[in-house]
Image 1 (cartoon, rainbow, N blue to C red):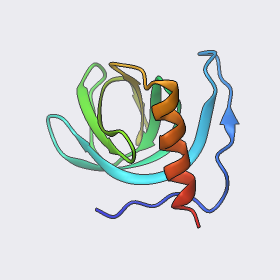
Image 2 (image 1 turned 60 degrees about the horizontal axis):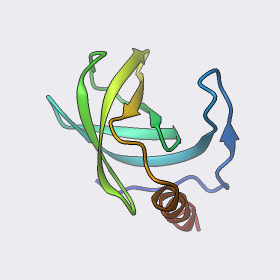
Image 3 (image 1 turned 90 degrees about the horizontal axis):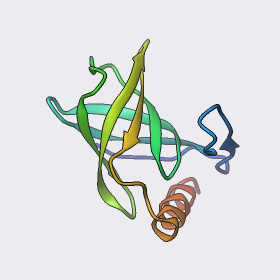
Length: 109
């Protein structure tokens, strides 16, 4: 599946988790009990939120294909109305996260 990022710069989103999220628009695949298309709408070094038509259970172990860091494993912490929130099993390091955001932004042009 082709992936693309939104045509605007990433913008941090703050929430009750205390971790800034960067707003993105990136289409990729999620694998786990099933393979499904997902649209990542925000991301941080600790997790992401995505839209998907797949039925995903809280607690499920899933993986995502992301630029610069290839595949990352995560746990679904919430699912509601076609959206899911996941926590990465291993947080993305600062340098790798910077590369990931740079790649997402590069793809917006």
